[in-house]
Length: 241
Image (cartoon, rainbow, N blue to C red; front, side, top):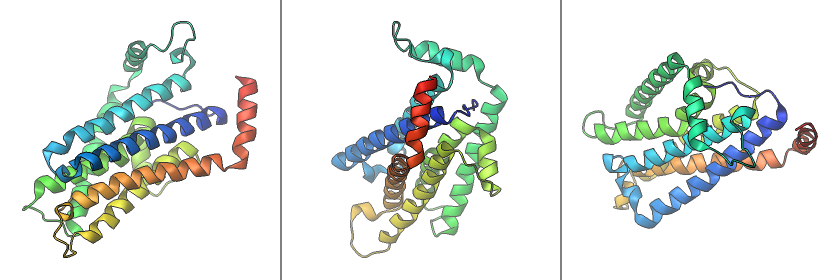
């Protein structure tokens, strides 16, 4: 919701941080869910703490990215990074109208995912809680980061078939693709006659969506560091900063 810098060095720094931090926290989240069998709660309100973890992680990344993007919010070697001060300054600059637009966009996307899930075979009324929670998870994984960093316009722009060459936007776009693909792949185990507890809707789809999101950031990170043009941009950026 705040304009990002057009400086290639800054965008590269933001993208690498975002993808790295996403890989770390999503790996830890998936590991914790697997060790505690908490994935079995996917689709119920008991799974809400996982949503909160994802949302808080995205907000913390957003705060750091804004500190990189705006010098007046950046780290101070003598005073350190004042998290509360930065959050306060960001709140002062927040456009309330844009926040409302993002909230409406997110709510609409939840409905869209809900309807799409029903069209793909989910029960409309028998398991409405599970279907709603799954739709909410997809929205938190895909659209929430996009609204947070690029605003509500980015979602409508994407739905209209528009594209952006910004590598940070492309990383978030790949996250949408892989999250949805992971959810789709997860659905294949539901009808199999294995009689496993994790085959119940929407556990495999929720698991697939989170794993797909993680894989998308690993792919983006690999492409980012394998790009030969990145090194020259980084060198020029260090000289100018």
